Length: 244
Image 1 (spheres, rainbow, N blue to C red):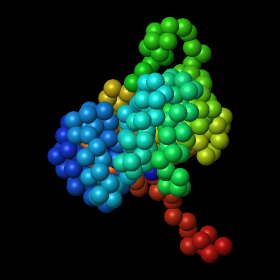
Image 2: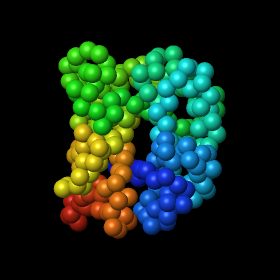
Image 3: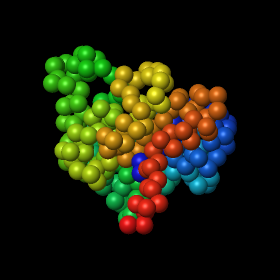
């Protein structure tokens, strides 16, 4: 069953832990992004871990190999579960990051590295403008970057639901796909161009679903999170079928 990650896209630790408290046991995995980490730093991650929560540190690292390797070691020391870096950083940067994890953690519970492919806020036109050339499709570009990540030794990628199935087909079931842009049916897309429902994400093969304002901006965040968890739960088998 896919895991749900709640995005702590708030500006302070007080607001973050107010949300964590509201979600209670329903919220087990949290994303800490650039704004919150820049304001609150490693102390917030340590506090989440002390509360028994898993942490997805979404910093999208992109720098020279030695600098990225140092940042990866620091994240490993915090016992972060998932960490992002840009696949566009190049093979040497990716391999340095993978090597840094191996130096820091040798157990099965090691931190896993995810490559950022194409941000879900970007349309095909914006990608072509940024890249400076035409692309066949967003899906092809995401898969190409996913392949670069796999060649560099990454554990998986961040991509939209629309590309998840092809990534799994090309790179294998064990290669992780983390999908942001998750919305309940009828929900707003906010600033993301490529969104999908939880059920659609699971059908496409997503391993982790990142949910932000669909939960955090709701009047009753815990109820909305539990609606998503129920949608992801496999249907119970009939009594007669269970006995077979």
